[in-house]
Image (cartoon, rainbow, N blue to C red):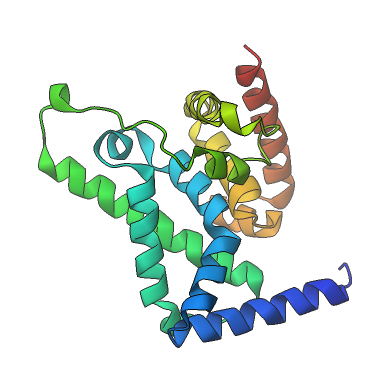
Length: 205
């Protein structure tokens, strides 16, 4: 096990205090907490929401809804480190996306009336959250990059998409990924390597 550095300890203590302050309604702490995680959250939502939800709701509306619910539920969160908070945050986001998908499927709207909601003014920040997947472009190219990455990502298999999101967006360790996916850590390492290679090939077309 690698030793925990002084910087990591300080960051963890800082995050714990932020969460405590945010749960007490401190607006400054709430803003800081969101700033730390919003880019990855936006990337997670864009890659997770799927065709149906994307056609019905903008990713930014979904992100804002997730943020509100997360902040309202901070008093129920038991802090066990920065990684545990990030895992809790993305779990909440995952449940929200699933709920929205179920809601829209129940609507049974005419597919011919659906319109895909495209990238919005937060594309630059979203791209920063995806920085571990591709080399970030200049801000002026962010919209094209996000669309290109999303299109390539949708061509990946379910397992490939899952391992990439868990490893590169959520930031889970391979032991945690293995538990989530019902595989061994060595299998998830191999799966991630193949997934990133496939994604790179799709992006280079």
